[in-house]
Every structure is written in C-alpha cells, then in structure tokens.
Image (cartoon, rainbow, N blue to C red):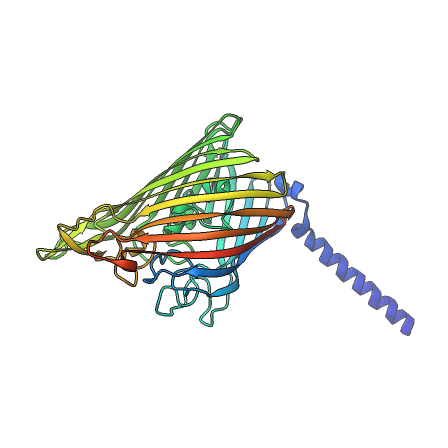
Length: 428
C-alpha cells in the first residue's frame, strides 16, 4: 500500500512539473523564435542600473530640480538603484504582438524638491515600487512597412532613436528627457518606413494623453512626430522631431490678456554611429506660449512666450574592443530667452503651473526660472562580460542666473557627483 502511494505521489509530482514546464515554454522560448515572430513565443527580459555616489559639492540654492542630485548635501554618499526594468514581450500571432514593462525608477529621491515631499516612483515610506510603464498591442504591417501600436508605448521624442544611439541612459537621460518631454504615453501610434526593403527612411507618429502613466486630466492631447534618415550604410543618422500640446484655455479678462497656454518642441538630431565610435549632437527649441508671467519694473505683469533651448554633444567609443570604452558629454540649456533686466524684475510660471515646461522642473526654491545650465559627464565603461558594465564617472551641473544684481553663489553655483555606476541586462 505504501509502495503504491509512493508511486502515485511521484506520478503526480512528475505530471505537475511537466505541466508547469509546458506552460513555461511561452516564457522561455528562444530569442530566435521570438524575433522570427513565431506565434505563442515570448521572452522575459530586464535590466538594472544604479551607483555608489559621493556628492562633492552642492548648489547652495538647490537649483536644477530636473536632476536627482538637487537638494542632496555635500559629502552625502550612498548606494542606490536608479532604474529596474522587468518586461515581457509576446507574439500572439505573426500579425499581433504585446508588450508589458514594469519599472521602478528613482526619479526624485525623498527631499527633492526641497521640502521633503516624496516624489517619483517611491512609496510614502521611501521604498521603490514598480508601476506599469508600457502595456500595448502591436499590429504588424497594417500596410507594408508600418505597424500600428495601441496602448501605453514609447513616444517618438527620443526612446526610439536618439536614446539608443547615445547608449548611456544608465549615466544620464538625453537632454529632451531631462526637460521632461515624455518618453512614454497612452495613445495610438504608427511606426514605419517609407522604404521597407532598405529601411533607410522612416517615421513615427503618436497621438496620446500627454500624461504618461497617469490618467488623462484635461481636454487636450499631445501630438508627436518624427522623420528619420540613414545614410552611409546606416552609419550617418538624421532625425527631425516635433510635438505640440495645449496646456489650457482661459478667456481674456483683466490680468490675463491671452487665450491659451501651450508648448511646442522642435528638435533635430545627427549622429555618426559605428560599433567602435559614435559622435552625436541633439538640439531643441521648446516654444512656451504665454507660459511666463514677468513682473514689470514699472508695475504690472506681462505674459511672455519664451523659447527654452538646449543642445547636447557627446562621443563614446572603444579603447579595448568588447572590454573597455569611454564616453563624454556636454549639454547647455536656457529656459527663457525673454529675460530683459531693463523691463522686468522677476519671472514665474503664468496662470497654469507650467514650470515643468519652463526649466524642466517645478518652480525652483528661489523662484528663479531664468538660470542657464551647463552639464558635463565623462567616464569609462568596463565590460567584463556581455550585458554587464561597471562605469566610473563624474557628473557635473552648473547654474548661472540671468538676473541682474545677484552676487556670489546666487549668481552661479554647481552640483558635482562622483559615481561608480553599474548596469546589467538579462534576456534581451
């Protein structure tokens, strides 16, 4: 009797394990099968990056709220994750595929912006938490060379091209990303090529909520689009991007002599991209219609429509092939080209809270949305095995006000951070 029970028990255990294994084939199908678009094939993938950092100097006014080191005092050091991704891609059929991505990201540590509010992807006790970053279905080749994507998806702003060629998101965001142009949004998009055989000329279009993972909160949609070109055997890359979102509408009345607030970005990108050496330049003009309320020295308020401008230049390449690389980057950013010290004494966001579109962050603690920024990073990339990176680097950001009569550190100051960044991937 005991022997029969033992046999039955072993049979059920074996049956259970075989059932689990058969179900798990969708998770563990080979990457080759997934890339070939075979029905019922999928892949589980992810990556993580973070640092050990030491703050060498802190801006005395805690400016630059678009960066994660604002408000962190000099000499602070810590180990931290800055991003954890866990994704699953699945081919439902050869025509339809689905994408799901969970993300935990240290966008704003506790205490940043100053005042102690918990922001970013952290719970109220400061623990990281996953949220749904991407969740969409793709219909392949709705016409030759073009896919339709519906759901929460990557935007055309930078994730589909310039971020990939920059290749060091683990070190810093692209310049458009730093200024909070959305990297993902909920909507319907088209991604395709005009020449499906050579794939040297293509486009990306998206109409979306403009609220990323958050529910829609207004009547207006964000419109994105870019066109890209590849030359010299796909080594030379050109990309032209534009977007538009209306932020609000107010009827003219007294102190508010305008009808709408909006932002509209135009961005250009060029890169020479090879496995051994990459050089890239990216620049944007972000027109902010009626976004800034300027206090007149003679009394009263003008509502200005400035252009925020930014440019980024970088290089990365091999020192020892497949083992050691270098990278360096310089950015310059001006949030407001309408500063006139002879006419105005102060500047702040207008009726709508559009500070996020002016200086890449909420209104700074010093109520100064005029300060220019220069960002520099450089470092080495040691790769002991494929998909594993250790990267010693320096992170530096300088702030310079455009207002008259500011002396010392109010006139200009900087943040500098020394880091050992680690980055590793799996399944993709």
